[in-house]
Each structure stands twice: as C-alpha cells, then as structure tokens.
Length: 260
Image (cartoon, rainbow, N blue to C red; front, side, top):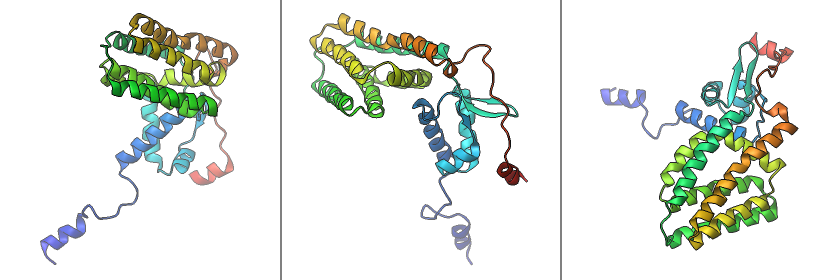
C-alpha cells in the first residue's frame, strides 16, 4: 500500500461519516437549548438538573451537557451544591436591575439619535412587526410574541444606527428575560404591551422624539413593578439572603444500579 493510500485511510476526508456532531458543536447546541429553556421558564427557577436526563432528552452525551451547565453557572443561570446537585438559579432582582439599566441606557440613547426621515425599509419592518404582534394577541401566542418583541427592539436600535449594540444588550439580559416571561404570564397582557410598542412607534414616525424616548423608558421600567409584585406572590422563585437550600437528593435503586 502506498503512503498516499495510508494517509487516506488514517485521515478521512470531508466525505467521511462521523459518529455524531463535533464536540464543540454539540456543546454549543446543548448550551443554546438549555439557556433558551431556562429563559422561557420551561426549566423554572429552582428546578433540579440531571445530566443524565438532560443528555437523554437532548440527544447528546453527558460531556457537552456538563460543559454547558458549567458555562450557565458562570452566567448565574445555574448553581451547583456539592454532594447535592445542579439547579436552575432563582431569579436575582439585582441582576435584573443591572440588565435593565444597560438596556435602557443603550436603547433610549439610540432612539435619541434617530435622524429623520426614517428609511422606508425600516418603517416597513416596524409596521410588519407590529402587525404580527397584533396577530399574537388574537392567538394568545406568548412565545411568538416574545420573539417579535426581541425583533421590535432590535429594529429600533437599527433605526437609531446602533443595531450592533444589540449584542451587548442581549448578552446581559438573560436574567431580565426570565423576569419578563414571568411578567408576561402573570401581570402584563399581550395587548397592553403591543399598545406600548405602537405608542413608541407612533411618536417615532411623527418625529416626536422626546415623547418616543419617554414612552420607551416607561415601557422598559415596568419590569421593576412587575418583579416586586411577582416576588410578593411567588417568593420561592426569587433569590433572597437566608433562603434555605435544596435538600440532598435521594439515590434510587435505578441510580445505584447505574453507578455499580
């Protein structure tokens, strides 16, 4: 066999099949899925996290799941108690306030810098987005509304010439987003939120920028009242000093058999 033949056998090319996705790719997929489930409250605050169960459900090995949980722990979305287990972090009002501060500073400053007339393509995008938000009200589709809400605020940043700042806002607002989802399910109706969005857009299109910025700031700051009301009704979802930690997990017969 020639040297070239040996290289072909020991170093498969692009067409060679692999057993599952590359490790880094699997970790990114697992990370994004788990982060999204935590933000959407599909994994609620305080929920216990089993590497075995998550790996089986997501279709990955334990390694990318474990690595994802470590990253989420560094982001404050997961916490680990030695000898007990991993849990979804409770909502931290301090982190929510910090994220809201960043978001308000960026979005309101961007809106203040809008130059008129606004480009037709951006106005069309804003109009279409608001129309689709209205459909979510009719269909009571909170998940789709949340996606459109993200797009709406990104469009406002684009109109202000600062769309690249969305990455900064997005990287800090995971804790804020959990509070927003709690608010959406308990306090704020989709219709009321859409009307607030329309109010900002109406002032923006009319060139009434002081009114547009004031409406946006009031809209963003509602989260503070929401957090306090939800915290009073559901204190077990929030991080507080002195809160008792989860009890040690009991190991069942099935777990004992797997570890044997």
